Image (cartoon, rainbow, N blue to C red; front, side):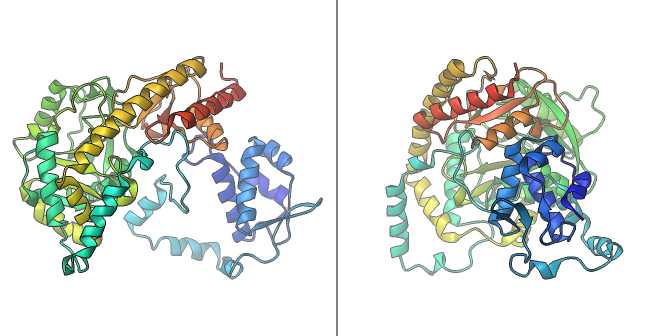
Length: 494
C-alpha cells in the first residue's frame, strides 16, 4: 500500500491518553511491521502529512525522527523519507504471515485479566529520561543527603552478615518494619505493631496487592473524581467496577444520599487529595468510617504527600481514627526520598496479615534486603525526619517562587490553585480550553504539564495543568515558566 493510501486508514484520537506524536509513531510502526507500508515506500513530506492528518508539523517530525532513530525510516538527501529496505534486527522475519482469523484466535489466549491490562491506558516506560520541568511527583533529588547515605551503606557492607545476601522476609526487613511502625506512631498518630507492616516495592505494588486480595470481579470501588490513575488501574485490572465520587474543598463528598451502590472498597487520599489538593474534613472522615462500617467495606488510605504540608502541622491519619480495623494504610518513600528506592509500606488489619503476606510472596517475595536495611538505619538514626523537615521548608519556598513567576508571566492564561501541600499545584485554564491540547504543545517544548482531564472519570468544563515544582530550582523554574508562556501565546487561547 502506498503511504498516501495508508493515510486514509490512519486515525488519531485527540482526546486519547497518549500524545499525538506517540499515536502517529505507533500507527506508522504498526503499518511498517505488518507490511502495509512496504520496504522502500516513500512517505509524503512532513508538511503534507501534517496537513492531511490535521496536526502540527512538530508532531509529525517527532514521530518520524523517532522511527528514523530506531532504524525503520531513512532520509535520502533531496528525495524524501523512505521505509528502510531491511528492518532492524530480525523484525523483518516477524511480519505476520498467518491469516487475520488465526491472529484473532491467538489474541484470545490472553486471560480476562490480561485483556483488561492490555486495554488500560498505561504509559509503559521504555527508556529513562531526565525529569523535565513541571513533572509532578518528583522530589528534589539533588538535595538527597548523599554523604549520610554513603556512610550508612559503607557501615552495612562492612558487616559480614549473611542476612543481607540471602532471601529475606516476605513481610519485609524486620528492622525497617519496626522503624516504620515507630515513625507512623510518632508522625501520623497510628498505633500499629510491626507485624501489621508489609514492605512493598512502591505504593503501586501496595495498590495491586489490595486489589488482588480484597476485590472480586464486579465489586464496586468508590474512587475520587478526579483521582489517582494508578489506583484505578489496579482496581480495573482486578475487574472491579469504579464508582466516581466528586471532590470539593473538603475532599471526597462521601455522603451516600442518592448513591445506590454500597462500596466493597473506598479509595481515598485524605491528607492531600490527589490531584486537587485539600484535606478530608474531620466530619467527612467520621462519615466515611461509618459508611464503611454499615457496608462492611474496607477503606484504603493512600497517605499521599502528607509529610509536605506548608501551613500548620501534618494532619493525623484517617487510620488513627479507625477502631474497627477497616482501614488499610499505604505510604511510600518515593516522594520523601527518591523513586528509585522502590520502597513503600502497607499497614493492614491483623486479620488480613496472613492473606497479604502470601500475596506478597506471589508478587515477588521481597524487596532488596540491603536497601531495606539501609533505610531502616536512616529512619532509626533520625536522618529521615530531619530530611523531611528540610525538604518541607525548601518546597514551601519553591511553591511561593512558582506563584510569583506565574502571577508575573502567566496571569492571562493560568490561575493557580490553593494547594498548601504536596509536590505540585493545579494551574487552572480558562473555561472551555482543552488542557490536553495545551499539555501536548508544552511537551513539544520540553515541558511536562499533565492535563487535569486525564485524572477525571467524568468530564468537566474547566481544565487545568499539574505543575510540579519540588524538583526544579528557581533559575530553571523561571526559564520554564517563560517557555510555558510562549506555548500559551502560540496557541492563542484568549
